[in-house]
Length: 418
Ligand code: EPZ
View (cartoon, rainbow, N blue to C red):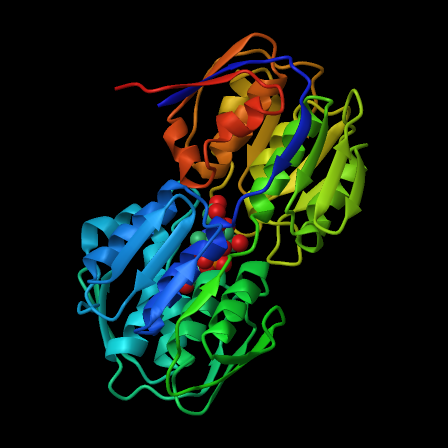
């Protein structure tokens, strides 16, 4: 599938932000922690979420969904072994490890494997579970976990991994006693997962801080919940306004979770008005380069917005530097931006960008989700037509991005290659 983009249009208008992929995925996984029905609304209609639904069904759950509304009932769940092929399709399948162990005291999974942006090991997930007394055997790509002696306890994470923090929380929420996670990840999606577990009767304190305390409960009950809005989708749409010199208003925005992104956009000369869950961006005719951006775990600058900011920097006045501290191989989009006329030099985890006045339409290839979104942003600004190949990667995290951009006045067409 490809996007065909006619560039050079100034974007303008108002959009409502969808639910967050990185909140909905662990929340769907956590829904197997109860045998009662869980009702979710405002779930983004994106590929990764649909695939998580498929995995839950294969594990024996009753999953029904229409649009953004999901009903999951894990009463009939009977499998503790993850389907290999499907779990390789989405890395987030690993979020089921903790919940399956909590339900069955045993679980078998295969390595979710790496992706374009890095090797993405799961050693921190496994060391966290071992600290809870899980016996983990790794053999030829298969991981067998025996949780018959699981217990609450202290978990120290060497790095504040989002996924490892979420897996340990879900493994510990029904374990008698107190589990403490030290050096936990502080991402807003973790706070949202803990809010969801709280609605099911879980007892968790400190979500959003580096120390999380989980008081195990006997059982969790069903609930109705709406995952938080997607701060990365919101950031991407703000960047669409910024790169086209436009004026964009977003509603249903998690404003407090976008401070780092908004600060960089202001540094580039954008005017931003924030009010409750609304952000209005007014872009200058030409952006100004920021000197340095470093990606960090939350509340630092989110790595999932790095590619979009690289696209902005490529047309800004001046020179700027981006350092990618979270993933070891997340500049795959730089080469394609250079094909459009950008001047980006990459060395290891650092990119040095000398901004150009204009980009030119070209045939480029999406190599990962956020890189694909960044190429689409650059295409909006470029003169002439751009073809973004493998745009199906963008569907993994955006619900029909082309429709959202076209509602702001863009000209993006989706062309299926089959
Ligand atoms: C989550 O991935 C997000 N995915 C990612 O979003 C996001 O980039 C990332 O957090 C960081 O914010 C979802 O929530 C579904 P990590 P996760 O564990 O949990 C290393 C997107 O575009 N690490 O915090 O996989 C790892 O290799 C995606 O929406 C280990 O070394 O991220 C990476 O370098 C991409 N060992 C760093 O830590 C481990 O056991 C951060 O990974 C785990 C992680």
